[in-house]
Image 1 (cartoon, rainbow, N blue to C red):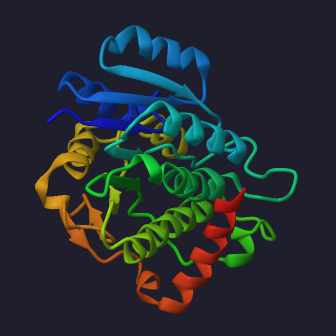
Image 2: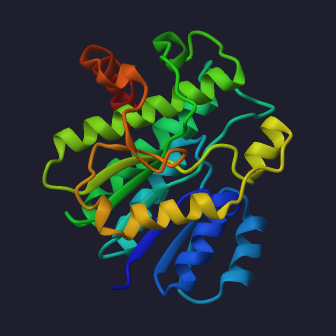
Length: 260
């Protein structure tokens, strides 16, 4: 059955490859990007079955506007793949001290998912890109009161999104499904090349699991769970995700950003 699927960060890496694969399968893909030139290049390559939206995920007001426009334009969006992410950047902190890794990797996908709920059917899916890199979250850093190194910020932001996905599922038992997925470590993406200086592993490893998470029956009852593609199965995320007090504190900070 043809699905309508939104993919954020679709102009590079795993997002782009997943978009091309899903469009080739005949699904209607809505492709998000920050860079207008890259979106134009993708338009020229992908052809039919695609529409395009532009927003800078660092600016939550742009995320809000994008979500509002999508709800107005589409009767239904079956799947949202929250792929956009940041690891290293030349400007890791905003003027107010906020770390862009938490904004792009945690707050933006949570906000987008929250605002798109009116357009997502109960049997729809939210697929959040997590990571094998997960670390205990410094709440002061999460609210911009302490600076982190690149890997610290990335790992903490990915765990925060995983926790939010888990909490979302507990509050939306009737759907949509919300699942966090580590698509695979050190895949051949721009992020990996710039962050680790390696070409990375076959990108299809990540593409295949994202398509499974979006469409396959095995994820139909996986809401709130974490899939670790490094081991090829559902697994427990970082142990902090099992600590109700920690999760509550993290989710409260994320949810505060849903009101912008």
